[in-house]
Amino acid sequence: MEKKEMVCIVCPVGCRLEVFEDDKSKSGYIVKNAACPRGEIYAVKELKNPTRVVTSTVKIKNGLLNRLPVKTDGTISKDKIFECMEIINSIEVDAPIKVGHIIVENVLGEGVNIIATRSMALAEKE
Amino acid sequence: MLKYDIVIIGGGPAGLAAAIEAKKNGIDSILVIERDRELGGILQQCIHNGFGLHIFKEELTGPEYAEKFIEELENIGIEYKLDTMVLDVTDDKIVNAINTKDGVLTIKSKAVIFAMGCRERTRGAINIAGSRPSGVYNAGMAQRLINMEGVMVGKKVMILGSGDIGLIMARRLTLEGAEVIGVLSRDNFAAGLMRNVVQCLEDYNIPLMLRQTISKINGKDRVESVVVVNLDENKKPISGSETVYECDTLLLSVGLIPENELSRNAGIKIDRATKGPIVNESMETNVNGIFACGNVVHVHDLVDYVTEESRRAGKSAAGFVKGELNNNESFIETKPSKGINYIVPHKIRVENLEKSLELFMRVRGVYKNSKLVVKLNDKIIKELKKRHMTPSEMEKIVINKSLLSEQKDAVLTVEVVKEA
Image (cartoon, rainbow over all chains, first blue to last red; front, side, top):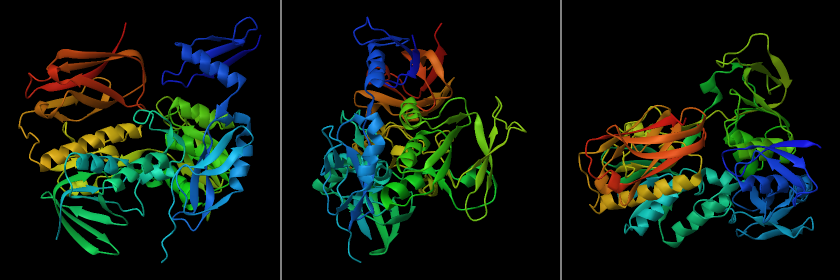
């Protein structure tokens, strides 16, 4: 049976977890060395379906800055991060924008949107 | 001459929180002075998430965190000046500033709050040998260029320093299409949070190169390569262990230093350990009516702690203006003892505490299964068990006022004790 080692990042203690596949357990895994139950939940999630929030920027026209920061408003599959980045890189928006504005709806078909993480006013004309 | 009750220098998270809290405590005449083109400070370039878990109970990005405070500041009508540089503050609280609209400004204030934040340590401060090509950036500078200006800094990048900014930038550069060769740490562990090691390096298969540093930078016009050398247990380079890595860019993430030129000129005493002003329980410096908060006092790792500390400074400055701040000459002095690098605040006037005292500190090394022991005049008043402590994570101890109230001109110490 294959052993997988990982560091738990739920809290600063950083338990060095050892995870074994196990058909008999409810989660399908046995997690060793976790000092608290959150370690097991983390390990199983990381092995079964690891997800991340992606933060980046998109181009913005006529804004105070050249870039508008954005994020996914929920987590997406870890293996789709670069696919998500390709979509983010293809976008250009126009100022003004309000924080929370949806930039891309239902990106990657996972029910998660890309939203603006700040408001941006029009650039002042010189 | 302009006149205000409170002038706040710096419009980042510290200045914003201090200004809002001063206003909420009954002061209307407030001016925030910011040298950048907008408020929010460094939060505006920290587009990653993880901010605000303590105060807002949700994970915000830096710009979202900043916007909550900027919106509140504008809603309650606090004045601010952008693109304005403060040149000098005197100990009688005259602020000299300059911008292109008003020219030279002289402002007389009843109280001043220093919230200037910190700066990155540069290549010059760490003495790397070699030539002076372009392509050597401080990590925070590169972050600003990429996230706000839309300028990519390089294609093949080495990162020196494993603090959180270095780790965050390793991921950011990778997402933007650069190849990150590795992140170098002098120690046998990363200086930043484990969470960032996992989510910024391991997620993208970026090597964490332990016990290694850069001994030389090569290149004429642009960085062409760096020489990486192994370090022994005393962090001394091991001769003959040099490896050359081709790259076009080097990012430096080698520490932050509180920015205290204005403080020193105003006659404010600086703590050698924090490199920030010596402050009391009200975040007041040794100059009456000049307060300080945020990264100008000591470098924090959580913005929520900056906000809490700055609210205290704002409230205290309001109290000072209203004549409600007790200026008793007797105080408790705090002193870091075994295993503790520094403690903020440095002086405690017990009368000015509300219910409790919050002490912030950093330990000197990595400690497992230890406790923090607080003593007042050598008598233990509090013990806190800690499973894990590291210099990269600030420790906070809350002490009930009743434990302190009987004491005057006393010394309070904190030390690390290993548990058997």
